[in-house]
Image (cartoon, rainbow, N blue to C red):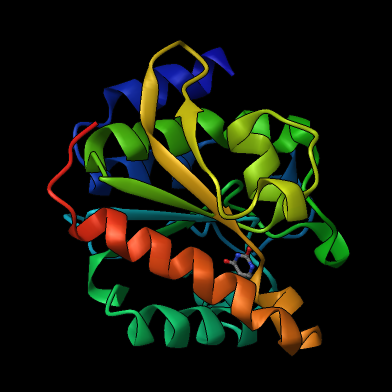
Length: 202
Ligand code: URA
């Protein structure tokens, strides 16, 4: 983690951060069959940072986050809310997990300095945590996603300080299986959109 933190701190731009991640050997997932590092896509000047769980098979093949089925649904939701152009989209880990399992807290911790550095460089007005795994990692809680979602919380950096106000919502992969939960996500996204459009700075 010290090495990740040093490399992340040296990156002066999001492009340099992407290069640092691609060269980083310290995440155990890297040696578990991933084809490439998947860092981010979207607006590097956007006011919204989105953090998902981790790349799946499609993302691993294409080198971009959220480009599979779940990602397409996420884009449709963001487009409907008028937020897609504001979004900078990344994940808690940058390499595909074997068999699409949930990344472990250790794997997330190995990548966290880069995620935090991305937030420091982007300076988003708000962060959307997509799914239980991202929400638990960023908010450092074991509370269930149904409990955490829809509430504004502070995303605290591991070295102290607050990255940005964060709101968690359900994962689009879950929505593909449980479409009746879309109303909850829509509620969270509207809340997010109100916050992004307000002039209030916290
Ligand atoms: N699910 C995620 O959480 N992230 C991706 O990038 C793709 C699917």
